[in-house]
Image (tube, rainbow, N blue to C red):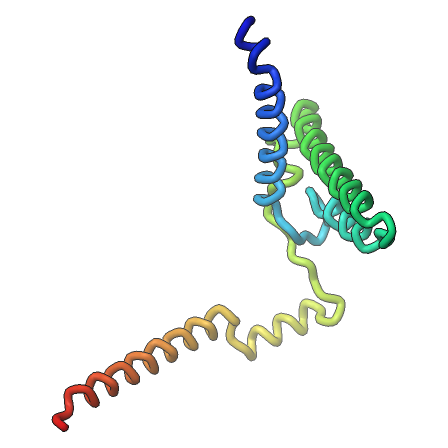
Length: 154
């Protein structure tokens, strides 16, 4: 009991820091884009709207309030996941915010156009690998020429 009396402030501060760090890590691990706007995505969009609409005369209080509301929204998403897990609506407590995101389809391209584009053009990942290979070959050639010049008798 004397331990709690002497260290109560550190214990409370530690619990608060632990909770906020836990929320931070969960938000960091969750997807940032999803076609269905699941998880923390609505909270992030709301935060961005609030930050953009802050008036210049009350900027600091507005920013602080927007960040607090965002953190509260994130905590509600986590709490909703735990509640859905207890009710049997989802398999794990984190299923509503850590998931495999669905790709958002662009309004400009439909699926047929995207398939045709990928058929006619190689994937960007393959192109990047080819460019990296060419870059490596070019660097090796330059290094070989520099070594050859250094070894020439003068």
